[in-house]
Length: 93
Image (cartoon, rainbow, N blue to C red; front, side, top):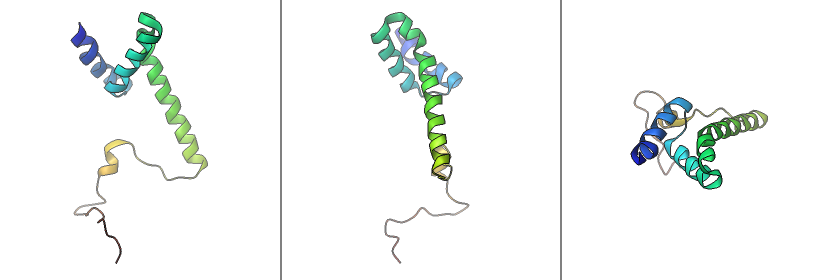
């Protein structure tokens, strides 16, 4: 049972609610300490709700400040076209 609760469940929840397994594990541990078994049962929905609220707050702030939209995740690491080189440390020319 410990393997299922500590390894398998966070991986399954990550795919269904799009949460990092570490966040799920920390939320479950925290809520279990705070409220026992009922806390553990509501940990994932609360963490998912918190993530949605934070994303919306950040999106609204981004719109208010007229900041360019930043793609989430690995898209930040993609280069700008074929053969593009990353910027060098000394960009002074």
